[in-house]
Image 1 (tube, rainbow, N blue to C red):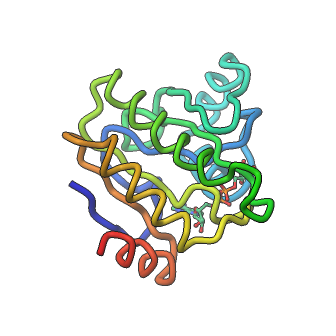
Image 2 (image 1 turned 45 degrees about the vertical axis):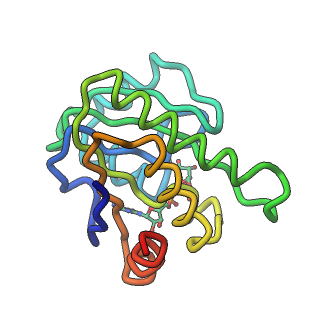
Length: 161
Ligand code: AR6
């Protein structure tokens, strides 16, 4: 089950929200900054103990001050023109997040549009990869795709068909 929701992911009451992090897991701008701001400093402390995450992989922490019980931190690829394995790395970020969710008994999960902000991935192409990967690897999970603006929502709706 996949739905599109327009708004701030930090406000969602789901079992897990996904963070579009960087390899250090030490915070940043965009959705990463918003999640750390809403969760509070204990989240950064737990992230520091993890010691980073390679692109395409995922790590799980508590949600602290967030309504969500968990944060799944994943690192999407930086867009470098599309011939540097970006599609597969983005699919991998979604797939590994879904696998981790299932391992931790997560029933409902919300994703931001990973890589489509600071990392520059074309949002229409990213939306298609997100939907395809969730359709294959997200069975039995309730998935919310979070759009932060109307254009992002439209790409996601189009990808859902
Ligand atoms: N809720 C939902 N979506 C959001 C929110 C929010 N509060 N804030 C931004 N977005 P980005 P990336 C959307 O740049 O491209 C960080 O510095 C945003 O509009 O957050 O994967 C990390 O530390 C866009 O559609 O992530 C990394 O260094 C989407 O979230 C780097 O940015 C992703 O944009 C990761 O870049």
